[in-house]
Image (cartoon, rainbow, N blue to C red; front, side):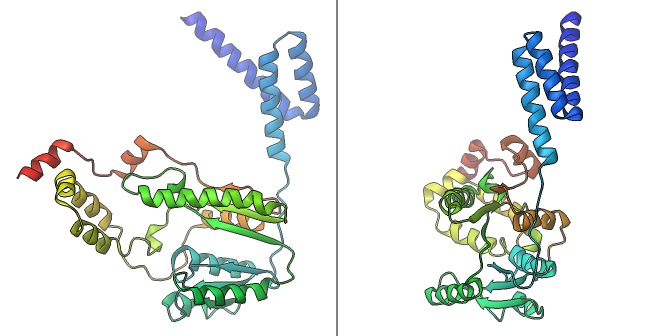
Length: 307
């Protein structure tokens, strides 16, 4: 056993050593490693090391050219009454762009705060009202007319990549956004329009996304059939009690997260942006353990129904 581990450790060391030589020496190192591997007939290992080295060199030396912000460049942002939309409107204006901020109501607290910033122009945008949508489209079209550089940034969620228990419908809508964005990226690419998906991460404490959760939970519970009440038992109540701690109305404030804005700057400014900017998703077991979600028990539900 000891001899086997020694041989494996030696092989790993050799591969890592060749990899570091290749990265440090650049093209010369790749040529040397390839010649040595072919001479010794180590084709698989040589191919792996060379491909890994080339990939790393491309990543290291690739240029991240960015566009220069200026007041004559227009950025249209929706959902600016609160949360992420409000925060990005402030941030983008601070970068130097002119911002057209879509707000559901022009008399909302967020709209009133943004109105104080000279580089931000407000437009009312209620997506449930066709007239409001048409006016917003006409307004934005006037600003964007004759401007050659265009990109569409679609905000999704980590739930679109790795949905959470109890949030299957929400996760499905966010996954749908990612799929829609991916199709648009290919469709509009031929016209020079970049379509980018952006997954910003969690910031629920600065958003009103959960503000009406308690009302919705009561509405759902009231609509339960007798069969559903028996099936779920007290699990539905425990689950929503857990989430109730997140339910509050948040004032419109800029999210204090430098990493969020650094990532968004890449989305907005990179001349050659990636199709997706997102944190690494956490899956299944780790998610439920990390969030400490209430666990469903069929036995407990049955006991509760019989009680």
